[in-house]
Picture (tube, rainbow over the protein chains, first blue to last red):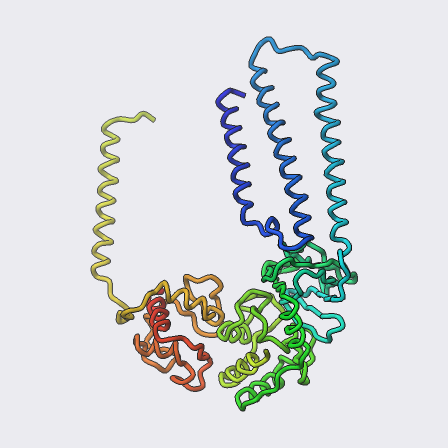
Amino acid sequence: MSKSRCKKTIAFVVSLFVALFLGGCETLSLAPQGPAAAEIARIWWILFWTALVVSVIVFALLFVALWRSRRSDVKQWRQGRDTAFVLVGGGIIPAVILIGATILTFSGLAVFAEPRNATNLAITVTGHMFWWEATYEGQDFTTANEIHIPVGQPVRINLESADVIHSFWVPQLHGKIEMIPGWTNVIYLEADEPGVYFGKCAEFCGVQHANMEFLVIAQEEDDFQGWLEQQRRSAAQPEDDLTRKGQQVFLGSACVYCHTIRGTNASGRLGPDLTHLASRRTIGARMLENNHGNLAGWTVNSQAIKPGNRMPPMQLEPESLQALLVYLESLE
Amino acid sequence: MKLSTRGLILTVITLVLIAVALAAFYAVRASERISVAPSREVSGGNPEAGRQAIARYGCGSCHTIPGLRRAEGRVGPPLARVSERSYLAGRLPNTPENMIRWIQYPQDFVPGTAMPNLGVTESEARDIAAYLYRLH
C-alpha cells in the first residue's frame, strides 16, 4: 500500500469513529433512568473503551507493519521473540480481555435478575399485534399501551404474548425481553425519577411492528395510588343526553365485539380495554396524541393511519360519530 | 474519434439553437396559461403556523394533506389543491371566509356533517386556511 493511500485509510477510519461516537449522543439506552438500564450502560461503556483502545493499538501495529514493509531489508523472523509477541498479543491478551468481559456481563445480569427490595406490584403485559395489554395483578383492571409504575420500586412485569413473538423494550429502564407465546418471561422494572419513558416492540412481529410503541409513566407514590384508584373504578356513566347517545352508539355497533368498557355490557377481548380511554395520552399504541381530531380519524378509519392493524373501518352516521366521540372522551 | 475545431463549433451552435427554441416554446406557453379556478387567498394568515396547527389538531387522521407527516386519512376528502374547488363539504361556496368558519365550526355551519368541532380559534383557522389554499 502506498504512503498516500495508507494516510487516507487512517483518516477514513478516524472519521468513522468520530461519526459513530457523535451519532451515539442521542441514544436513550445510554441515558439510563433506572438501575437495570444503568448496569447495561455501565457494561457497554467498559466494553466500548476497551474495544477502542484495542482498535487503536491494532491499527497502530498495522500502520507500523505497512510502513516498515516499504524497506528492502525487512527483518527476519526471530524465533523466540516474535513467536512470543504473537502468542501473547494475539492469544493471551485477547483471552484475558474476553474472560474479563464474560465475568463483567454475567455479574451485571445478576444485578437485575432479582430485585433489591421486595415488590408487591405485578403487571402482566401481553403483546398483541400491534398493541400492549397490561393487567395489574390483584387490582382487577386491565389497561392498554400506557403503564404506570411507582418511582423507586421494582415492579414485577410478567411478559406474555397473545400471538407471535414480541419484545418489551423501555431503553431508559431496561434491556429487551422477548414475549413468547406459551411462555412467561419476568423482569423487574424500576425507575429512579418520575417521568414518561418511551417503550417499543423490539422483535419484528408483522406489518406494524415499527408502530407498536407504548409509554411507561413513573409517578410518586401518592400520584400512583391516585391513578390506581381511578383505573379500578368502572367506566363513568353518561350524565347528559349526547353522552348517553354516544354510549348507545358504542353498545349498538361492532365496537363491543373487540373492546371492553367495564360497567357496560361491552366485554370484547380482542382490542384494548377502553374503560379509561380518556385518561391515556396517546392512541394507536403511541401513534397519535389522544385528542378529538385523532380519535375521530382513528375510530372511523384506523387502517388509513396504521394499515394492517386489527381494527376495521367503521361506517357511522355523522351524528352518531359526534355522539360517540363525546362518550369516548367521557371515559376518564 | 478525432475532435476537429469545425465539428466542435457546429455542435455548440446546434445546442444553443435547441436551447433557444425550447425557451421560446415554454415562454409562449406560460404566457398563454389559462387559470382553471379563481385565485383564492387568505389575508393575514401564516401558512407555516397553519401547518403546525394542522399537525396539532390531528386533521391528518381524517384527511390526506400534502406537506405533513402521517396525514393520509381516508375519512374525509383529500385536501390537495383544495383552493381550486368550488364547494366545501358539498354545500358551501369555497371562499376564504367560508373556509375559516368551516374549519372552526363545521357542526354548526353544516349540521349533519361528519367533521367534528375541534375548538380551533379564529386566528388558527386563518393560518390553516392560508396553508391549505397554497396546496397544489
